[in-house]
Amino acid sequence: MGNRLSKIYTRTGDDGTTGLGDGSRVPKDDPRVEAYGSVDECNSAIGIVLAVASLPANVREILTSVQHELFDLGGELCIPEHRAIQASQVSGLERALDTLNEQLPPLKEFILPGGGTAAAACHLARTICRRAERRCWTLARTQTVAMEPLQYLNRLSDLLFVIARVLARQESGSEVLWKHERR
Image 1: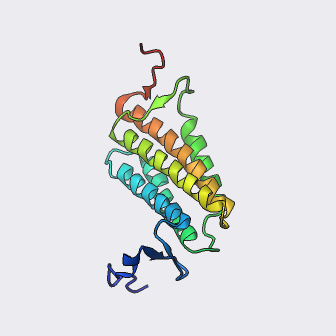
Image 2: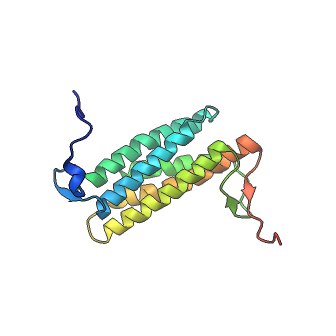
């Protein structure tokens, strides 16, 4: 493949624009840039979860696969008219979600973000994923965005919630439940 980035800075963005994958230039706060930038943030947050050494092997495998797919999704958003995320990838998230969720007790209360370092990091990744989904819907109001990336982000945030529950139970034995009648 050769060297893709021989020089890290180009100075071309000093005017407040950035280049899309098709070579066109847009403002740095363009909805498309906001969308793929939020997907990149989600990917980075998942990297923090993966940095925890004690992750279960199945969770590590799922999240590593998700990171690759999020990179593809970012590419789809960065290159107008490009398609990278397929319905089969959305279904793959659903299968992982179902498998992990069937091992958990039913929820009776809301859960607070926490329960251990990895669980808290996973909750943070979940909230960033929700923001990425919102940014993609903002983009979809004015430009063409395929349904698969939108569905993928929606399922991924659910999956990250379930993984956070799994990790909280592993790290501290249970989730941190919201106490609505604490006064």
